[in-house]
Image 1 (cartoon, each protein chain N blue to C red):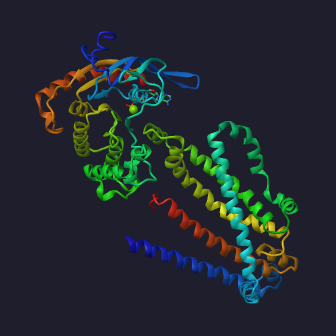
Image 2 (image 1 turned 60 degrees about the vertical axis):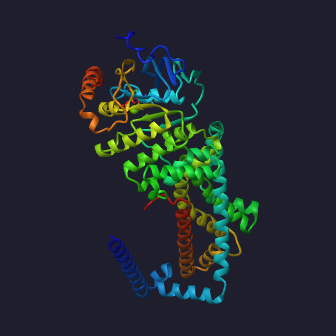
Image 3 (image 1 turned 30 degrees about the horizontal axis):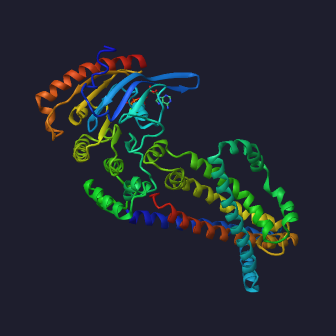
Length: 257
Length: 277
Ligand SMILES: Nc1ncnc2c1ncn2[C@@H]1O[C@H](COP(=O)(O)OP(=O)(O)OP(=O)(O)O)[C@@H](O)[C@H]1O
Ligand SMILES: [Mg+2]
């Protein structure tokens, strides 16, 4: 049984590799044949070259580091704020009813519009990017956590209450752990949003970061640079998601896969 | 029938107050602008240490009655008392086994079983001792670190039973705790339950669909009418203990009781089927 699952996994990885090579090959081939096409979309070998240049020039890791820092700061800020807001609304339905329209409106607002404002308010440094990232993460975590807290099976609540549980007992033994599954599913989509928030912020005004590099390349009509920047971002998302999955497995060990 | 048989359970001459007493309890659910009357003037006394089984047609209000006994609902009229004290808010010292086992999916078997002790802030030494004892008694020791999702249905039931019993509640409320099990497991866990109850001597209110199970386990069987539930009749079951749940079914006394109670129940089951279609 384990063997078949493993060989299935290798089959998938193999097919993914073949598909990636085919696409890259087609891209390289058509870009080499048509120079206009190459101007717009660059080509894989040039992108790899560019990436190598960045790495050897020694500033890629600085840009990546700053983008990561902004993403992580924004992510944590958004998660903490979302959790707190969800707890407040959970315990006080009155508060929730009062602020609900504001929450809905703020959530529907395209956050990119706030980018310039945040830069105006918080400057060109880390804070404005982290805030932008946090403003995206907050709502996802808020809605995920709130529904997680509200969806606890009623009989479980009854049972634990009958054991003599206080509100804090209920929160610690029942509501939070049961909400954790929802929280993590919201966190998984939040990572992408946090990164997007940080990059959009950098794109609009910054002196460093991967988003800044992309904006710079774009200013020079350098599609190779744009693609190289996107590639760096993809790597970062993969790493962050991997880490998150580790943490999730650690904190919700009861979910047997 | 309405008045004469309702109070049979309260045999006269008790000095002790009833472990649980329903006095003219009515209850209705509100669904939108619709009112669903679940219980109508139910009066029932259960004396301490008794094992009482509730039988009645599906949807008649058995679960509702247990909810009221635990204080999870308040009666629309009438009153519920535990040991002579009118019940206010939630009952304490109650073990509740819900029909869906209601285990905490995020806690291991061991953590589930010791939860009542943790909530009561019992000293660590005592908790460890009791949990080890209950893991052994229920045969769950090898699965102490497993999560509920990794257990079979029968094992989950045993965890739920241990969880309800470990803190020695004076009153045990069980809502069809064995109904999801196959015949074999049902007899097995039923016997375990009887053994545990014999040791602890708590009062048990036990809801079941299964008349044979009820006769095998209980001291007393309360037959409820179709919705709104009223107490239709109470049968004392004086089969000798300890009982063997399989062999007992063959005894003539068992068969006589079965015939008598089923005669009472059949009409209610039929009328509930007719009124529902
Ligand atoms: N939360 C609720 N809201 C509205 N009506 C309810 C609710 N719970 C139960 N009822 C109604 O009350 C009646 C009694 O329900 P109850 O669950 O007590 O029946 P029961 O005897 O336990 O049935 P079963 O044997 O099928 O479990 C049912 O007819 C049901 O429709
Ligand atoms: Mg029921």
